[in-house]
Image 1 (cartoon, rainbow, N blue to C red):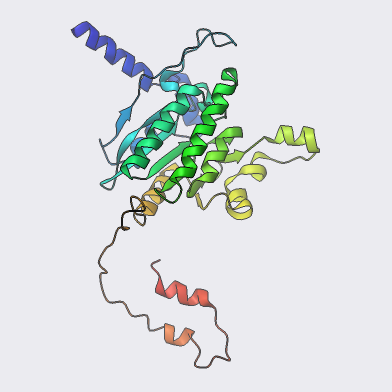
Image 2 (cartoon, rainbow, N blue to C red):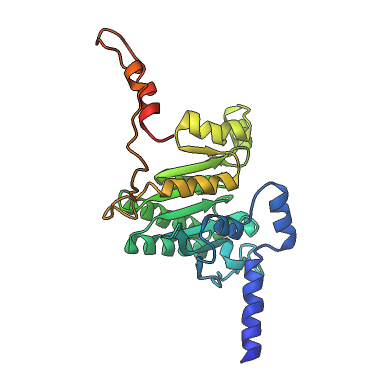
Amino acid sequence: MEKRLEHLQRWRTKVEMGGGEQRIAKQHESGKLTARERINLLLDEESFVELNIFSSGEYTGNGLDGMENPGEGVVTGYGKVNGRLVYIFSQDFTVSGGSLGEVHSNKICKIMDLALKIGAPVIGINDSGGARIQEGVNALSGYGEIFFRNTISSGVIPQISIIAGPCAGGAVYSPALTDFVFMIKGTSKAFITGPQVIKAVTYEEVTPEQLGGAMAHNKTSGCAQFMVSDEEDCMIQVKKLLSFLPQSNLKEPPRIEPVENHREEELTDVLPATSKQHYDVRDVIKRVVDS
């Protein structure tokens, strides 16, 4: 029995290492955290419960023989943020570039199903090169399953996406269907196809940042709603956002008692005495809402 437990622990340790020490080091060199580090940074300490850690696909043919994908390139489970239940998945770029295959998508779909059933927010940390091409239509079908769950969850539970690396192809559709998208300056990239294909087809030359960087999607396309300086700041802002959101459409949002009965005397100077004078309503908003 002890030997079996030791074997189980070695297996777990191997899976938790993802793509191995070299790829983890490369991930850190590029200024990115690993999938598990991101989860630990966001969730309350020791609250994360991982699901399907030992999931693995059957790889034969199409260049897949002998391929190992620990955890199938995605970490899934549930935990708490400031004491509130959330479901979460975090794609592991150190394992096949975080590419999505059939089992990878099954793990994500299970988390989304549980979040919808229980009535709790779902958070997706996206760091993926797109579909695992070797799996063909099975990978593409996996995206369809995820998109379907995005749509039936819309307006029912909060869906939050973090673009934590270069996401291309099918990897960018799901975040665009969620309620809130966070992007990190200099790190996040989100585009359906990359600059090289754009150049080959339209003869236009664009950089990855111009095509799908944090500024492009926050300022121009509107696909993202939040732009943050780094991953630590991102997790802080996600926690702050969650503090305003209900668990589901059947629950009330969190409420706190005001510290004091605030009066803003400057409002009398902002608002004109006559309707013939104009004023900037943003000056009113700044003095009324929390900073």
